[in-house]
Length: 421
Ligand code: SF4
Image 1: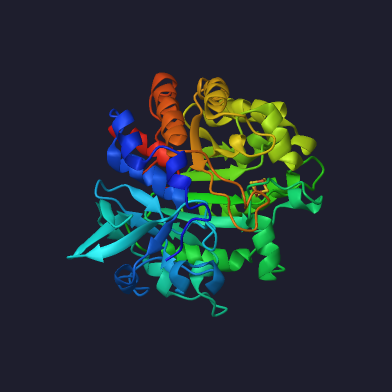
Image 2: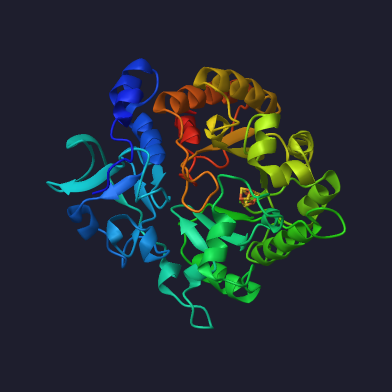
């Protein structure tokens, strides 16, 4: 079992119980989800024994990354209300800022334990899709090229982010490119031939998937900034479109912020239905410090302007934006207090949501290999307070923020609050 680097951390912030009592209008099981994503997860030997790679979707990245030093962990958990919780997320397991929650299996039930006390239970681990058992024509597992969440197929089109071409211009919370470099990989993109084979096999499983997601690191090259990135996505989207008879198919792209010409090309030449570009940090100054590459190459104001402009092309309700919530409180240049951060973040978020753009904000965990790896994320109270406000704003401005929600993703607990729509 691992323990927090600061043994006194519990005395310095509100507990799960405190927060559940304070926000009685928010589901207690949802608050627990938020805290699990904030603090991390560990598995008891009983829980490890229940992980069966023949049945469950498991995450295998390299032994030193894994909890309990086992070879794999479940990709996700199914909550009792049918929603999901991503469980493959990385956190500092050698010296975590806080003790992680422990998953155990007791008396035929999956439970979540903290300080020896059961604080929640859940249904089980995600089951893997059929295509995970198949191989591409080159002998590699198809899951090398295309991955799946319970109801979504996803592909990472570019595994390297070119904001890292300039030393220290990558986003400070992001481990994508440092991990890519550490892995010794040399191919930024997979061969589309094998992606096609994976999609062909995945689509044979009727009723499993409701959406396709494409994402990847930024590509800055081209006649205009991001032109080559755009072409990479168009190529893959056209390939996927061949599996559908109609023009549009349920799909989401998370990419750099394209300009209007690029967005129109994307919309007209592919069957994409939903566009996402991540604002990352809800404050111009903090964005400049935390995402220097994005700030230098495009700037906060232009990123935001393009995000809002994309609603005219993809339609209200078909555009979202993501953030790494909590980085605005990183030291030394973040906000001085959670109250100050809350005021600023909510005001800025409203200026985005009011255009009909839903927010898919991730919980920041200072991730190993990222520049922020030794930082401490905010309190549970802060996350619940901010998500609660985002939910109110989304209910006010967006009648049906259907996409990118708990039905498909499982990473953005804030969007779980849409369950009551
Ligand atoms: S979060 Fe920033 S550094 Fe990471 S892939 Fe996206 S743009 Fe690149």
